[in-house]
Image (cartoon, rainbow, N blue to C red):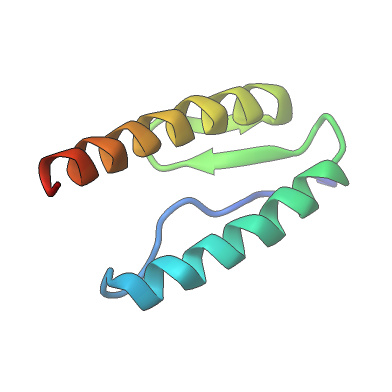
Amino acid sequence: AGKEALGALPAGEINIERIKEMLEISKQKIKEIEGLGPNSYFEHPYFGKLNLKPTIKFLEMHLKHHLKIIQDILSTNN
Protein backbone atom coordinates (compact mmCIF):
# COMPACT_ATOMS: atom_id res chain seq x y z
CA ALA A 1 0.00 0.00 0.00
CA GLY A 2 1.14 3.54 -0.69
CA LYS A 3 3.52 2.46 -3.45
CA GLU A 4 3.34 3.85 -6.98
CA ALA A 5 4.17 2.02 -10.22
CA LEU A 6 5.44 3.29 -13.56
CA GLY A 7 4.68 1.49 -16.86
CA ALA A 8 7.32 0.13 -19.25
CA LEU A 9 5.84 -1.22 -22.46
CA PRO A 10 4.76 0.99 -25.38
CA ALA A 11 1.60 0.01 -27.24
CA GLY A 12 0.80 0.40 -30.92
CA GLU A 13 2.78 0.89 -34.10
CA ILE A 14 6.21 2.49 -33.86
CA ASN A 15 6.75 5.36 -36.33
CA ILE A 16 8.20 8.87 -36.16
CA GLU A 17 4.99 10.38 -34.76
CA ARG A 18 4.73 7.66 -32.13
CA ILE A 19 8.38 8.18 -31.17
CA LYS A 20 7.75 11.92 -30.69
CA GLU A 21 4.68 11.13 -28.58
CA MET A 22 6.62 8.61 -26.49
CA LEU A 23 9.41 11.17 -25.97
CA GLU A 24 6.92 13.71 -24.60
CA ILE A 25 5.39 11.06 -22.31
CA SER A 26 8.90 10.16 -21.12
CA LYS A 27 9.65 13.79 -20.31
CA GLN A 28 6.46 13.94 -18.21
CA LYS A 29 7.36 10.69 -16.43
CA ILE A 30 10.83 12.04 -15.56
CA LYS A 31 9.16 15.00 -13.85
CA GLU A 32 6.87 12.58 -11.97
CA ILE A 33 9.86 10.50 -10.78
CA GLU A 34 11.29 13.54 -9.01
CA GLY A 35 8.24 13.64 -6.74
CA LEU A 36 8.15 9.94 -5.85
CA GLY A 37 9.08 8.56 -2.45
CA PRO A 38 11.88 6.00 -1.92
CA ASN A 39 9.36 3.15 -1.55
CA SER A 40 7.95 3.78 -5.02
CA TYR A 41 8.72 1.13 -7.58
CA PHE A 42 8.89 0.44 -11.29
CA GLU A 43 7.22 -2.70 -12.64
CA HIS A 44 9.64 -4.15 -15.20
CA PRO A 45 8.25 -6.91 -17.46
CA TYR A 46 11.31 -9.16 -16.89
CA PHE A 47 13.00 -7.95 -13.69
CA GLY A 48 9.82 -7.47 -11.66
CA LYS A 49 9.51 -4.66 -9.13
CA LEU A 50 12.49 -2.29 -8.87
CA ASN A 51 12.59 0.35 -6.13
CA LEU A 52 13.17 3.99 -7.06
CA LYS A 53 17.01 4.15 -6.85
CA PRO A 54 17.64 0.97 -8.89
CA THR A 55 14.96 2.12 -11.34
CA ILE A 56 16.75 5.41 -11.99
CA LYS A 57 20.06 3.59 -12.48
CA PHE A 58 18.40 1.07 -14.83
CA LEU A 59 16.71 3.84 -16.86
CA GLU A 60 20.04 5.67 -17.27
CA MET A 61 21.75 2.51 -18.54
CA HIS A 62 18.82 1.63 -20.78
CA LEU A 63 18.72 5.13 -22.28
CA LYS A 64 22.45 4.95 -23.07
CA HIS A 65 21.84 1.57 -24.74
CA HIS A 66 19.09 3.02 -26.94
CA LEU A 67 21.15 6.10 -27.80
CA LYS A 68 23.98 3.80 -28.91
CA ILE A 69 21.56 1.89 -31.15
CA ILE A 70 20.32 5.16 -32.66
CA GLN A 71 23.90 6.33 -33.27
CA ASP A 72 24.72 3.02 -34.97
CA ILE A 73 21.66 3.27 -37.21
CA LEU A 74 22.43 6.88 -38.14
CA SER A 75 26.08 6.09 -38.89
CA THR A 76 25.15 3.21 -41.24
CA ASN A 77 22.68 5.44 -43.13
CA ASN A 78 25.25 8.18 -43.87
